[in-house]
Amino acid sequence: MALSIQAEGDADKLSSRTWRGERGEEWSSAQGLESILISIQSLMSSNPYENEPGFEDAKSDHDKKNTADYVAKIRHETLRISIIQRLEDFLGINPDGTLQARPSQGEYQEYEHEESIDDSLPTFEPFKDLFKRRFLWYYDSYLITITEGKAHAKDDLVFAKMPFECSGNGMDGKFRYSELERRLKFIREMLEKETDGWAAEGLNAKKKESGIAANLQRQFEQSVESYKRDDNVTLDLELVDQNPFVWQITYFGRPMTNLDGGLFRIRVSFSPRFPEEQPRVKFETPMFHHRISQNGVVCYFPRRAEDVKSHIEGIIEALEEESPPYDPRTMVNPEAAKLYWGSTDDKKNYNRRLRRAVQRSME
Image (cartoon, rainbow, N blue to C red; front, side):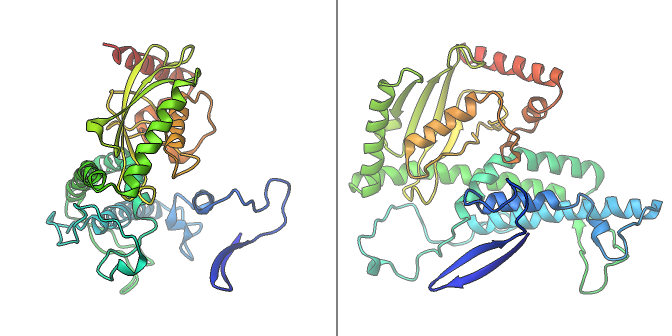
């Protein structure tokens, strides 16, 4: 598949030029950027060494060692540059853990007219919020990668040089997994502080009778009334400290499912920049579930980003799904996912652990 950027009038459009293919292989309007990237990822080799010209069929013992060394340093640098460094840039964190001077978002501001927005405001970053949410989803996986890396490469071990690398075209450096672990944990700490800060910003926005505060208050009231009339779902909604930016969901497990008899508390935190910044959802009730990280972060997909009820429906759907299609995006709890997608005995073990977590939710 060849992708090209075409300009039509004032809008740049991403187009796909493909062969006609069989039924089901054609381009679909349902496909988005993420599905395209996942498709591209599926075509990538787990052995990048053999992608180098002249090394496609390298199978000697020396090549096998080089292969392992090459994968090891790519994994280290991907974690350092593509994940940690990117999030540090978004959060204003220096590699040594100090914080950069940045414009404060501690006080909510609402602009009535475009003319009132000056050039000192932060640059629009369409994927910034997505990066942050996905970091929280996959934090456990990143930690596992670091733990495994530390077991195979001591700190300050120099990267092995590949036979196809040369001056100006190589990947030089050292393994420093202990430093990456410190930076990774600090990023999560800063994201949690940012989420907590939304509550204070939200109260300030409510005090100023802002449009977003009124919108969330209205959506809360509508959701409460809607679920009162819904016999299929049993849940209670509350505002924490009467703050429309912090919702508390008390969800009662649906009868005849693995969640039957459970009582779960879920906290939904909204940014004053919602829906540009999406809610962050966390299970406060300890739970073993393949769509919930060990830290309680819930992986779900709302159908409408601006509609809070759609978010709640997405959360419940993620919890209750019984035979979902395999989706690599949902691998947020590596231990639970390994059991859930494993053998028949693994799946039984998963269900037992899930049921124990449900029973403990009532204790």
